[in-house]
Length: 607
Image (cartoon, rainbow, N blue to C red; front, side, top):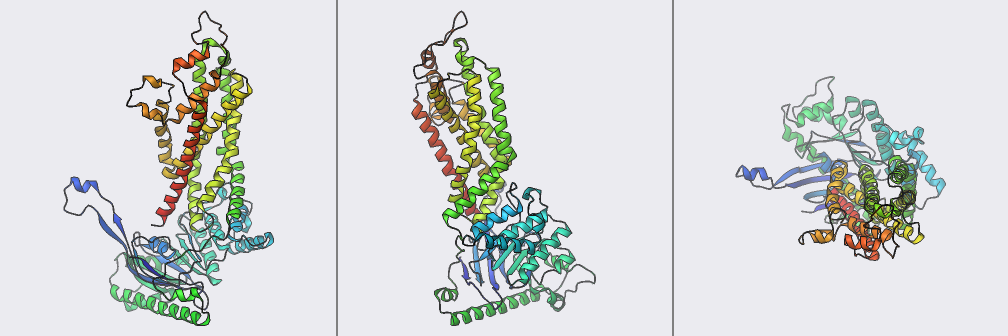
C-alpha cells in the first residue's frame, strides 16, 4: 500500500506539526537456505513487521525524543516521516511539507576541509541567490547557535564527535528548514558532548522549527532537555505527548516510576515488558493524543486554505496526494562550481591520495631506471625490457586503484547523504569527480613515465614518448576509476580483496605470460576483454613497432635485435589505435558503472 500524505508548507500557527496515524511498515525476509536443509515446514520467505499502527505527533517549537528498545522501529519511523522509505509502508502523515531534512546517524564529512569551508560549501548550494556577505552572516549566526564558531579553522577530521554532529546539523540549518529529523545524534558521544548536542537542538526547536530525534538510552539530564517524547515498542506507540504529562498518564495505566529513577530507563523497561500495568490503556491514550493533533493540524490547514486559495493548499486536503521532496536550490552551474571548488581543495590536501602517491611514482621511476638501465637500447636484453615495460603498466594500475579503496567509500557516503538532502545531482558530482581527478592522473602518469622512460633507455623519439605517455595515462585513469567503482560497491574491507582478485584474470590473459595463439581456443575470448592485453600490446607497439631499426647487440648472438621479428614472435599483430580505443571504452563503461552504483545506493537508501 502507498503511504497517504498531506503536504503543507506551513501549518499550525507557530510552524508545522507532523501528525501521523496508523503507520505500518514491513519488510520481506529473504530465502534462508538453512531452513531448506533442515526441511522445516516454515515458509522460506515471510514478511517481518517493523511498524504496526504507530501514531504520534511532532510539534513545532518543541524538541521531541523518539525512544524505544532495539528493533522497535525508531529509525524506520524517522525515514518514513522524512519520505526516505516508501516500500512496504501504509498509513497517514499530515503536515509533511517539502522542506524536510533528515540527518543520518553517522556524521560523515570530508576530513580535508575546515569547518568554515564545509559551511561555505553547504551555503553555496543551499543559498545560491544570496550574496557573499549574506552567506557569511548566515554561517556565523548558525555556527554561534550550535557552538562551533570557535573551531572555524579546524579541519573536520580533527573535530570531536560532538563537534562533528553539530557541524552536520549546522550544514542543514543554513536554509532554515521547517522540519528537522535526526537519527541518534548523540550516539557514540559522552554525556557532556550529548548534552551540548541536545542543547543545540533545543535552541533550534525554540526558534519555531519542528525538531525530532531518535535517542538511544538517554541519561536523566538529557531526557529532561526535551519537551515531548514518543515511545515505541514492537512497532507500536506506547506513549506520545509531553514529558511533563508522563507521570500522571503512567499512573492512570498502573505504572509508577520510583523516585530518583531515570524516567527514560523506566519507559524502556515498560517497552520491554519488565513492569506490569495496563499497557492497552497506555496505547489508547497515545492514539487519542495523535488523533487530537491530527484534527488540530487538519483545522489549521483548512484555515490556511480558506485564507489562501492556492493549488498547493487544495492539494493538502487530498489524502492520496503523493509526497514530493523539495527541489534543488542551486542550478547545475552553481552545483558544478561548488563541487569543483571542494574537490580541488580536498585533492590538494589529501596526503595519501595525492601527495604521497605523486612522490611514490617518482621514486619508483628512479628505482626502475637503476634496475633496467640501458635495457631499451640493447638487443640482447629485449626480453628483460619487455618485463620492464609490463611493470610500467602493473605499477601504474595498482598504485592508482588501491588508494581509492581507502578514501572513496567514506566520500561516497557523504555524497549519497548530501544528494538525498537535495544538495546536488549525482550526475553533477560524477562530472566534477572526473574533472578533479584528471589533473592528478595526468601528473602521476607524467611523473612516472618520463623519468622511467629516460633512465631505462627507451627510444627517445617524441612521437614514441607521446604514445607511451598516452597509454600510461589511460591505464592510470582506468585504474582509479576501477577503484572508485569497487569502493562504491564493496566498501573498504571487501574492496581490498576484490581489486586484486578481479585483476588476476586480466593479467593471465594479457599475453605477457602466454601468447594468444598458445591459449586454448575456448579461453581465447577472455583475452578480448583484458585491458592489460590492450595496454601491453600498445606499449610494445610503441617501443618496438612503427619501423624501428635494428637494436645494437653487445653479445655474441642476439635473437631479437630486429624489433620487427620480435613482435612477430610474440604474435602481437594488434593496432595501436584499436588498443587505445579499447581502453577508452573500458574507461567509459567504468564511469557509467560508477553512476549506476551510486544511483542504486540512493535507491536502496529509500527502500
